[in-house]
Image 1 (cartoon, rainbow, N blue to C red):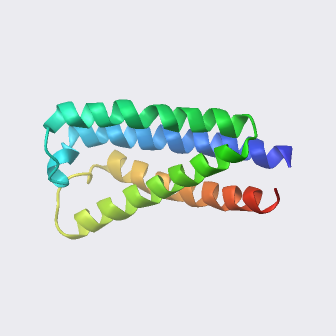
Image 2: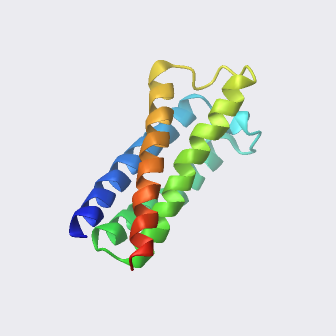
Length: 128
């Protein structure tokens, strides 16, 4: 069981790194325009000042083997699947953002890691 928690921690860590890098990429592509969000870079940065600390806190909870860490883990998994899905949709509609090879790699890796992390998270939720 300890092995599964360790594995979940490292998957969470990898997913957090991928999604935070995706958000850095999002600033390059001016994602706020893609979603028609007001406020430009200023609001984008404020949103991330609020969003990143819970991601990191969730990683601490997973490291400590807390059930609440599993909730944070599921939320991060949903974020990874959502990022992949929404950007794949926009690309399929002809948008030019996120078509750079590294952008596509980050999105695809986030999907794979999110699905793997989600599977382990659900498994650990079931055996508690």
